[in-house]
Image (cartoon, rainbow over all chains, first blue to last red; front, side, top):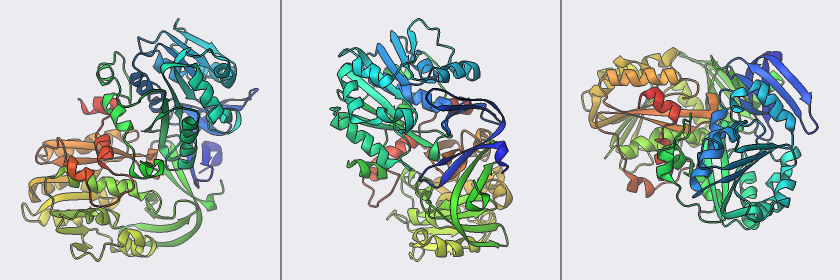
Length: 282
Length: 282
């Protein structure tokens, strides 16, 4: 491979790498927080890279954005107020706003430049940004959650980069305790929890921190995500109340279109592989 | 990346590539049928490559071998006679032999060298080769199926390379018609059917050929497979009789250990993503 024709991300510690063939680099900049690159790829549409890690491609982002949104929204009995911590590409925001019952979505990404670039290079992800229910804030999500009034939100979606750099504080017990405090009665957090094949210890540490913070109910979901390390990703829901079951009838009759998610996929994502069950001790 | 330190497979037409960091090349040879390479990798154990495509790694082969075996074996009401067409690394054979009810397994791989190399470099996959129920043949699987007596087998597992080169004839209507002819009353074929993200048209063509050959019942299963293109793989079952339901209680009480498969994973693998449903027209 000619390295000038490919963008490659090595998975640290996993001895693997994933590459996308590029037509050209469309943009790069050092924002106040991270190094941002946009490529036009051969077959994946546009690609956003943050600090050397693939974040979102036109072609396959639907897996991640749908699975960070619809399972938790159909698990909560009646979600009205949603916060997205991170999520600056606005893909998760778009999915959340598909739920007619949602009354307010606040997206809190520390780096405004991510959103400004998404508006240019991923306009389809930003098409709901003008929804009157949506509010975009460019401030520190950790502080936002810390300062929030108790019971002020129903669902917190932590749609962040990996637990190094600016996102590190989003993976710790102190942050989860602040989440617990500002969640309403049936409140839930969902956070991306990396690959079970590559990062099982990280997943376990994250679940441990969520439990230690006082979340008694945890649920890890699995789904494909081609451009992320190992191609197999996960998200973990932490709930104040039981996470057993979800609004299956509402899911089956969802009044919006998706590419990956449906009621069967929701059930399927909850299945725990044998080696994961053993690791989680159940 | 220094190309001498990595093995890289480009996914043709998908504009992506997957690489594994290698310590050294352990072996290479041109067999009568294909070019075989064995690498020692940094984090994936040993890796077998056939004609430039990753086939099996020590670390992640369990996904594929378990999902090519247990779902179809627990879908058939009472499988006793199983043929594996291809499968020369013997990983599928090992999984099939875990089922106590299976009385005979014939593995038919055209290339004996694949098995001889697996015995050296993947001994854990070959540990059941001495089972008295197992028979290893190194002949043409297409001819084997064509010449077989009607009703002589319960399950045919087509564990082949991609539909180019020696495996091409395993993906066509004529082959499926021969399979149908030699299957017993409740007979089933299962075959790897590539990635829904990358090869949906191939998957559709394969399903079309199975239907045209006379299989009225089809079922495509999905599972992660890190080293295969897109990291998300599939297998398709074609049945003479209905494929609705499977022996869930037997699966839940399986008398053997697995790494990925269990009864929940079996159900989960059957869930069809929205874009796949649309492509399959239902």
